[in-house]
Amino acid sequence: LRTPVIAASGAFGYGKEYHGYYDINCLGSFSFKGTTLNPRLGNPLPRIAETASGLLNAVGLQNPGVEHVLAHELPELQAFFHKKVIANISGFSVEEYQRACEMIDASDAVGLIEVNISCPNVHGGGMSFGASAESAALVTKAVKAVTKKPVYMKLSPNVTDVTEFAASAKDCGADAVSAVNTFLGMKIDVATGRPHFINRVAGLSGPAIRPIAVRIVYEIFAKVDLPVIGIGGIGSLDDVLEFLMAGASAVSIGTMSLINPGTGIECVQGLEAYMREHNIESPGAIIGAAHRIP
Image (cartoon, rainbow, N blue to C red; front, top):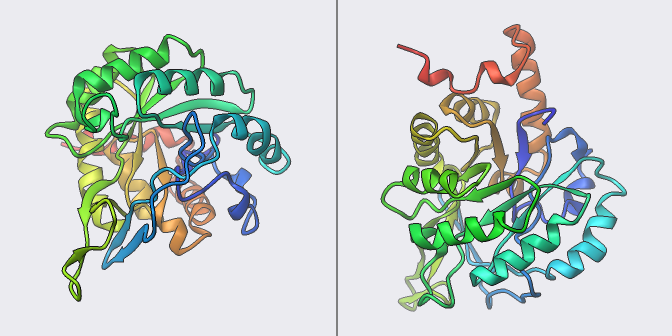
């Protein structure tokens, strides 16, 4: 990557909306909207709720499906984005993950595949693939068996020890991990006493989760020899530096781009200015700095 600042899946769609705000080629890359084998309409409304320091979302992976993305989204994207894109792939069975990743792997527009294992396993009682080490391993092995591009496993934080899942991902052939996905949260309508979301729980993202995400990245870097994309409430240069110093090889901006669409370019320019000011030639000199301080 020319810069370790990228945009996270979900908040960035397929790049079209942000292309109207700035030249998104300034980013290292971006992870496109979570895509499944078949089209999905997503969850019923309401789908989002703001919190004091973050966002709850239960969008439900609304997307047009892999075939549509290959036939329309990626060719249209190439008209204004001239780098390889990150393909974020989701599924509800091991077979779905494998087939979707095999299809997207054939695209020259895709540089790497980010596998979201926070989806419920329809063949396993609905438990998230990312909540079970065995299920996560099955998905990783299945995807690696049919792909040639680098595979990054996007880890769920809703487990006892995320580092164990990172280690398992490495053992199963993953090339890197993204850490972390959203935390489970909930909102109650106090006027009615009912849960705000139809499916009751939602994913919490934004500044509220940043300190926990930094801690998780720090622990993965210390215990597992695998590159990490840091995710969680990143919205400023200081946030970028904190994740890099914790051990992230790149950082992914999500929720904060919804608040300020220019967050991506501001972080890129801020990091470049910081490196010039401190005579740092490569972001590699910053990565893991917190582990080298006595």
